[in-house]
Length: 159
Image 1 (cartoon, rainbow, N blue to C red):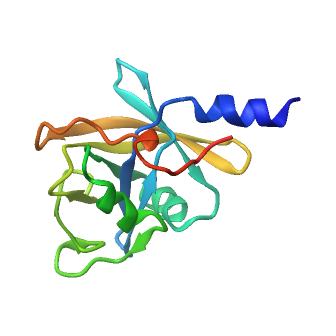
Image 2: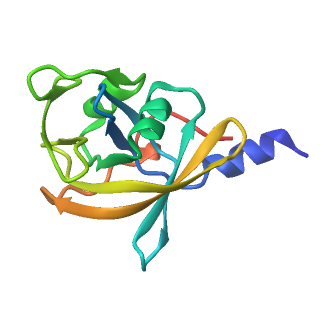
């Protein structure tokens, strides 16, 4: 296989940037993620790939639920705050950002343009990542910013 061609082609797939947050009752973890896709209309489901054995991976497995906070254009500083992951909250703030709780109990960023609250229905070992299939149980729109995409940054996660 032409490794350079594979890497370049995979990096051409457009990805959004999201802050995934989970609370299992023992604590909160949140991390910047990009490998997300809608997979079903009915029931409404998404798939998300998380690096194995990361803090957010452990918390999602334990909680069985999460919030996917959609970041908007101009929110690169929010993405930076969660780039390496965040553990714990202080005074309803996650990574320094104000939050509120929804139906699955995980933190929703007050400034995220949109969010999806999800319950995990299946997981699949996909190599160095685990694919979590999750049903959307609630959704919210908080403002009308267009989404922040990975290619709006100088970062690469893929290939």
